[in-house]
Image 1 (cartoon, rainbow, N blue to C red):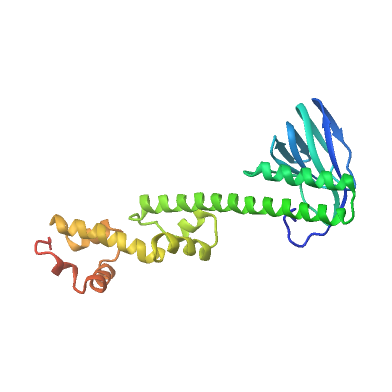
Image 2 (cartoon, rainbow, N blue to C red; image 1 turned 135 degrees about the vertical axis):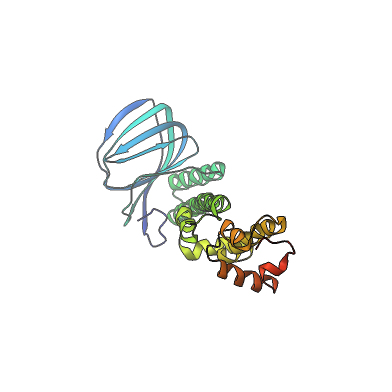
Length: 254
């Protein structure tokens, strides 16, 4: 379960400003979760098979019940919210573009918690939710960016291999690492049509150029363009251009 799960419950225990010098330490499991903004220094954490690193401007989540080893570089300073929750997640670091805003939210939470004026608890809870909202927005942006990277890899594969015998749309979807439905949605947004129609159009343009050269027969042009059945090729050409391949050009080799 992720810390960004919308169904989690939160009960804040305390908000602290903590600082310490360089050190390496083993920390026993604690009964509360921690969400910390790093003001100074950097740290590396290890727990079982999970490792994480955090630097200035990052927000770091450490789950309850997690014993870990930590190495802190330089002088460290953090603003941290300790809270109880039904979360069951691993430690995680969040690198944020709007770290100045996040710093202000943590600082306000710290100031309000320590003044303890009427309604302070709910004010701090609201600020924590705003912090989580900003993290969620950033993570969605990162995931979208990574998704587009794998999608573009699939498109690059298509551009290079669409004429090959073993080329398939299924292979493109696999390279994109996403569902068939989502891949087709992104493809339509980029090209304005389905993968099958777009690829067929590219093959027809390639075949068009071969036939226009007058150097190739219909069968040769079909095979070189990725249409391994010349009859199917002829049907596609007739559907697209309203006539057979042999009538499109005057000097086709028979």
